[in-house]
Image (cartoon, one colour):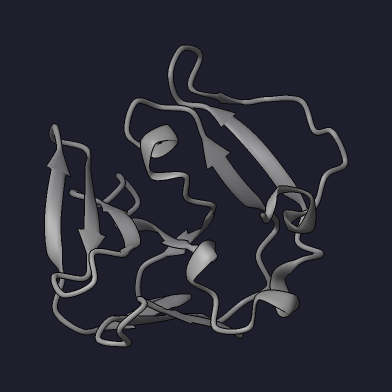
Amino acid sequence: MISGSCHCGAVTWTFDATPEGATACNCTVCRRYGSIWIFADQDATISHSGSTSVYHRQRAIEFHFCPTCGCLTWWRGRRPEPDGRRRMAVNLRLADDPDSVMQIPFYHFDGLETFEDLPRDGKRVADMWF
């Protein structure tokens, strides 16, 4: 299990699985945030607590922030998928134990043009963590 929290500790999340990989997206929002995401289905794998402020990006996605310290904590789909799942991702940069996530494979996602994963280059989170 991976856990994370905002800087002030008012908002927390847990990821109760081993992520297949961590993703950086280059869409117009994610590149500004500089976040690293790990994805799953809400409630099945990810749980969270604390009040958040929300930025709704069009009709598809909502970004959640701590209203006190401003940390971006997670995003989730605004509507369930056709199979009833609600996609969600937590910001891995908020991991409580950064050393525990360094070996997770790192992927790039082209959310700006093709909306596809980019070729894997063998990098791990440790390669992107500065």
